[in-house]
View 1 (cartoon, rainbow, N blue to C red):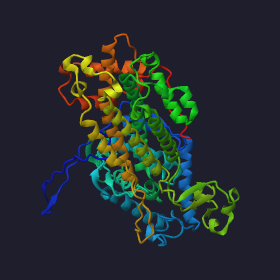
View 2 (cartoon, rainbow, N blue to C red):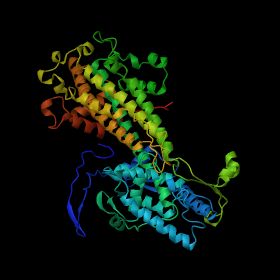
View 3 (cartoon, rainbow, N blue to C red):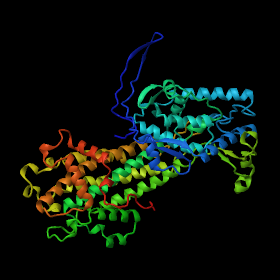
View 4 (cartoon, rainbow, N blue to C red):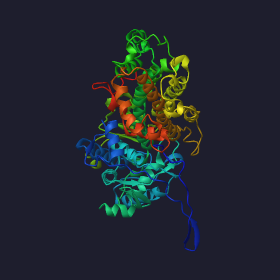
Length: 593
């Protein structure tokens, strides 16, 4: 399962004696390390064009990263502008002023590089980073790919912020040496994932615990084994790192990858269902699709049509009824709609992880003449004229609300809802195979007695309904929330952590439902083939059916001695549906528009 945390994780208490005091230790949850099959690959982070595939390569398969020359220069220039702004007396949130309800409290005045200020800032930053290992609360994030996804997203977007070069490099080094901090799942309200990045800050200075190549150990030990020294943060490094939605955005990256895998299988099992039902395929044809030109829906219908090209369904059959149950007839509409929501989320996440959600916004080179508002007295308060710390470069350092994660948060819920609306169609079309009103033929009239009934197929019965009810319980949108916290300064909450956790769970459970569909649909392909051995089913269904029967034979006595639904779900997850698609078939939907 790819859920954020493992609900089944156990807690074990140990009686310890520390300075004569009995304490309780919480055992680490079951941990799921990555399989670093791409650790010989290096991806350049530019801050502009990180793709889902590249992010996945780093997060889930161990690819390494490096900053492009442009990104490295841009990040260093932003850091220099921050220092210069403070030296020029500009008010800067979370640097020479406090944070939240302490935003008007002066933390230092004058040049941050003066001996007095430099020592003060360094000590303050060190203390903040050290405290990071104690931030948040459990359960711990138990999937390494979630933490690595957060880190690569943050590293890419950090090139637009004002982290010091040593801290920027340390984030790169943690990824490349596969030092994965222990991260707590709770503590974010979905608007700036402060706690989760603070856990990373602790590892950077050798505090707390982490996983080094999948093995848990003290962070100081991991850094030493990797040949790294604890970083010495400075400036506003804590702000530059942790004011971000990277925890949510990283999981969104994984959600897009896993969501695509589920939708690909939904298209393929639907094609198998059509063959099993002896369906009327007219809803997929050009006359129907031209009548209502929603691009994602038309694309999906065409995709399924290509999967079954050459199938007996395009030949005349006196037994074929004119119209299938709605759950089967309208599945391409539900699937196309889910693809539409998926594409919208994909586009949003690509924008989110290739831009800055940091507060304050540090913009090097921006001038008062670049936009009318920049020359007004209010904006000129935050204009940096330029000096030695910025190598003469000018710009602006302004506070903002870019850490508000909309529209990504909305699109996560929209995709969850669209997938659930597809899942109910899948669950219902599984049940329709039990009715001769739709199948016309009975398996008992065609198959041997040992191969009749839902137990012979391995799917159906109670299981699809039980799985659907779990999906249903997770798919209702959350009620918008706002609690006036931090002395009422922060009074909106996006609940992105909960939305993301539920979305990834729905995707995961959808694969279990698709496994049930696969079991029933392939069984009915066997029925149709036994009925008329010369029948063809189209390239996609035929290839998937043949490969699946090697793992789950038609003969129930030859199947693995394990829950067959679990065997099937594991097979679906290990074998991308697109591997069975005909050559040249489009792998991505068109624009979400």
